[in-house]
Amino acid sequence: MSTITILLLGMHIIGDFYLQPTLLAEYKKKKFTGVLIHSIVYAMAFLPLLMETESSAYFIIVGLHFLFDSIKFPIEKRATKPERLFVMDQILHVATLYWVSQIYMGTALLFTTNAQYIRLAVYLLILLKPTSIMFQMVFSRFKPQGSISSIEGAGKTIGYLERLVLAALVLMGQPAAIGWVIAAKAFARSKQLSESTDFCEYFLVGTLVSIISVLAWYTILITWI
Image 1 (cartoon, rainbow, N blue to C red):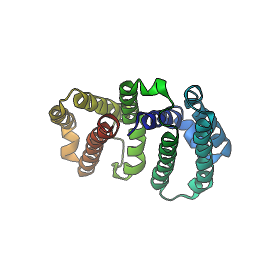
Image 2 (cartoon, rainbow, N blue to C red; image 1 turned 180 degrees about the vertical axis):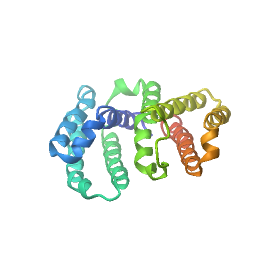
Image 3 (spheres, helix red, strand yellow; image 1 turned 135 degrees about the vertical axis):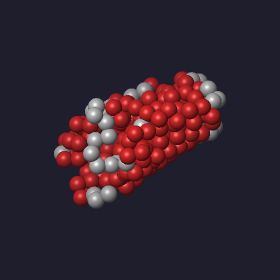
Image 4 (cartoon, rainbow, N blue to C red; image 1 turned 60 degrees about the vertical axis):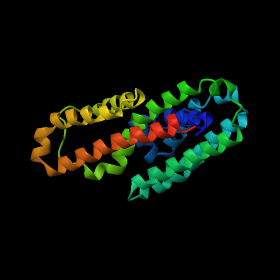
């Protein structure tokens, strides 16, 4: 995958996830004004493109994102499987980024000369909030009834830290050490694992998603040239 494509993916992640708090995401589902606000904020994440490429690349990305979100707005209210809509929406956005990167590849010299840092930054960004939201959207049906953690947000934070530790081990060339991290995690949850089959299944799904996401995105963003 080219550095330009990865760069655009990073800007998309910032605009569509990190600059879209939960309140805005929920408001966007109810009022079209939310779609407009999100589109404006999303456009801000791509402002560096105006300094390095033709302005048409910027307006194509921002315009198509607004178009896709506008089409999704009435559909989302009636959607019975929001996770499928989420996945399709992201596929359309990423396909747009890839198309634009093919047209304008090689024009952003400042970005391509910092390829290693761009790839690493996007790799870490995508492992945090986007992966967490994807897990919640797609695998929420596996979540056991009742609260898993007594501290609000603790599970999400643990997931962030877990993927960062796994990513660090992979980047340092120590993937075998991943087994020790999983063993420590299982030990900390040993009581719940022994008492609840539902929690055990949820634990396994979450753990496997963390490992697969870390390895898959490493292959795509770091080693795939």
